[in-house]
Length: 451
Image 1 (cartoon, rainbow, N blue to C red):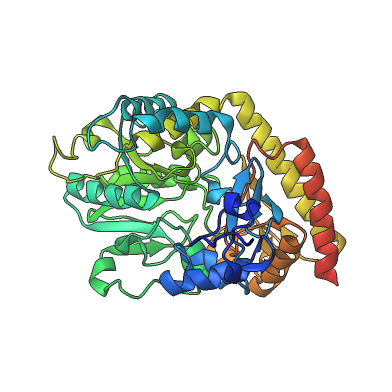
Image 2: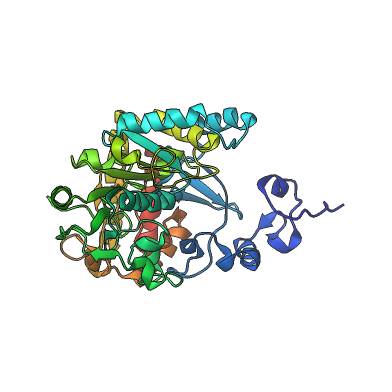
């Protein structure tokens, strides 16, 4: 007798042969396409983050049912070596035992209180003890909230309005910072976005990356990705970050590092430790939540005192510092020793080499720059000659060629981000066995691309 259909599909239901028939391609086999089409009925574009829709590469997305270590599985049971790793939020590997144990231990005590908790204090202490510039830390819910709070704080602390950002840097979905941006904005081919009035960006100045702008006393802050990881990974040229520090000091503006990606990814002190430049404020996200939603702003004690409830710049959030995210974040940071970072850097170099060699073997112009544990990717004209140093260089990437490479890799069981301006992420889950298997898959994908 047939099992009674249930209103959704999950791993348990599939094993019990109780899938909704209209969502299956066969007995117990669910369809990525069917589930995506179902999602489009209730979610705009079928996705909750625009780049996931595969608009830049064509086709429809695979729907992830579970993940473990370096791998994700889609609802049809296909396994992929995952080089997305939740766009850098996962560094220990999916479902790492330390993180899942912390979540299991925390959940029975409740998932949100709307009140202070010991864990949020401990996570703030963990960040402050590792990042010298962060004398105090305020937790929040996302990287976007962190950058928008940093902008408000900088304006409130200085009494100035203007913000300087850099072409190709991406600081989340904050109106004032969407005047130009890399990553999702660049991938969608949009210079900004509808819905942001001219007035919202009237005090936002966009400068070319790796060029120190001349500031005046109307500038509240300069906000920068110290390593531009939203346009294929572009490293700062020698003296760029130091020049920003000097120019901000000259006019009394604040220097804000957006370390949402680089924070605790490049090392315990992030990019500011690597390049020995001390910002006034730092924005965090991703790694500090252990894979759960989180954000944070850290900085000098006198600046952080400008935030409410003791200062005049308002910030609040119902879920800010919630026990689940802080527990996961603490578990993740406690695993990130110096030895782990050395190993991750070695794996990043190995990934870069295998990708470069595979593309070179079939005559595909491609470069895979490495900055610490981050791996970038440029194909086409952007990969000819010197590495890109700004967004104009990065935009020479052949997006059509990238789309072909993306699908060739996906067919061979390797998941890249569905956009040509993202970083490649390796983590603890990408051990020697995984990387050995990955090398074979990348080689086959390159042959497929050549064909």
